[in-house]
Image (cartoon, rainbow, N blue to C red; front, side, top):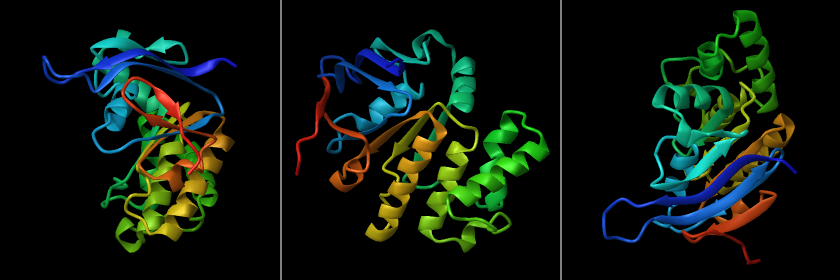
Length: 226
């Protein structure tokens, strides 16, 4: 199976003379795969996500998405690649309070130059997919935490990204709502035909992915059954 994401020999250190956070990390992710990466605080999960997203630069090694090496791109090209090919879901939602639900979901499409008609059609479809049909005109302040995370998922997937990166997406949610959001993430990644990477400290969250691993700095170790 052809790799969509290839991470090869990744090294990242933040201070001379101190052990690197990541050292020689390598793995691949194919289209249609949904991978959960677990680890305690400080093990390098956020560092890995930032390197994959091109928000940070490795000291050694490469990250390639659809055969394009991020380490070869300048900042402007990285911004464009993220805008076109990646979607992000965070613990803190990052839904813009001064925009309506529909405007939040439409934002990545507007940045990519979609027409108003195409944006409207896609936004409506995504809101239906996340269970918020008819909520497009509402303000974020009127929504619950679970609903806000659904808006964030709809926004992240609206432009059909090749890679979804989710960083502790259920950290601010109660267990029941978290389970609903995790199932929604899994199903929407599968429906979109891209790949998903879930960063989490929760075994419950990791169990929703097709494949779950533990990050130890040097590699991804398959997660042992609880």
